[in-house]
Length: 568
Image (cartoon, rainbow, N blue to C red):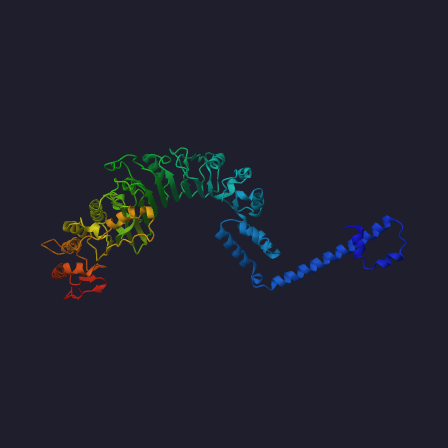
């Protein structure tokens, strides 16, 4: 501030007339003293304002919370956001919040490359806690400071470009990652290139590694590869070119006996690249005693069946447990896939989980063109275990798909003939039942000795709400024609075959002896009128042969035992 400015601030300019000021240096001294006095007054006022504002903050409800409660709130913010960006903002709200945030080292353990040199400050605030590396920006180079802290990194969750992954791969091979428990790496997908990384870990397998997830990046070499004896989760989403051959993959599973979760998504035909008429016999199986969840996404059903044929999944003795199996075949154009139930080998005695299933359903899902998705859902209420398998019927004519569904229905009886399945529901289009004969239904019910409830409800196709003009007269019309209900005579014959199969025609011909509830839902009344005699005969026949509690429910109405067709 200029001297003239200080003259304006002087309390009484006339007082200067009492001094004989002839020396400019003396004038500067006087002004300096006055400046110091005003600065001290300003500081005093600032301190008083700070105390008043702090007291005002203390009156706000959130500021009355104990420090421990605020710390838990800050932790929940960090956990929801997954980074420390919000924590940095929280630490700048007020002095009390800053003291609480800086005093809790757990808030500062999640690092991102975008923090730049500030990451070193975060590492210091994290004290000696394990570090978590995440949110790597693809345009940034890996930091040089990482080499000094690799032994403290507990989790890594990064998505990188090919060039950046190459640099980070050097860190993976550079030194031991003694504290690493979870490693998740993803590379930007490129259908024209594949990328590999060196999982050397400085020549020492991370002793604490439990979870491994790889997306479009695979190891440079698979033979003899070990991710530690403590690995619990193996999650791979790889192109077939990044996958090892089948024998090496099975050795990889065998090398990790504590595996609990296996997720595998393969783009392309693996393990068999060409058309394979039959699954080669298994030379040896790998036993996964601790596995509790398997999730597969492969191109064809035979790819999944090949893997399961080489796995032995026993149930733990002496206790029930939750196990989940999910399989989905991705290619809906291939004519090689027979259907979803062929994702499991015909002899599934090595998959003990199937024996625990008590409820199952075969459901028709979405359609793509003329391809129909079929889903098998089975579960066990007691153990909360479930099996979820979905796949496409062959992309061909309607009669070909009906034949494909018939093969899957027969396969169902083969897969579940050893368990205590008590409930089965079929929810598919009537077109898919056209190829199922009386003997086919009898074979299915003969396999399901403990079946108590059977339900059938036709799937109704709903066309899309909006149809692009260029497709209006092409694929959309083809779908509508493809899903048109069959003639009444054909549909009534399907139901007649089902009801006739449940009748007792001679000695030892009783099928599904435990079946007491048959449900037919959303059946058009004209169709029921045609099969009226079949309904009455089926109910009477089963009751005469000792199944006195057998009853038929049509469209939600339980029929009287003495007149099951009264409501038609």
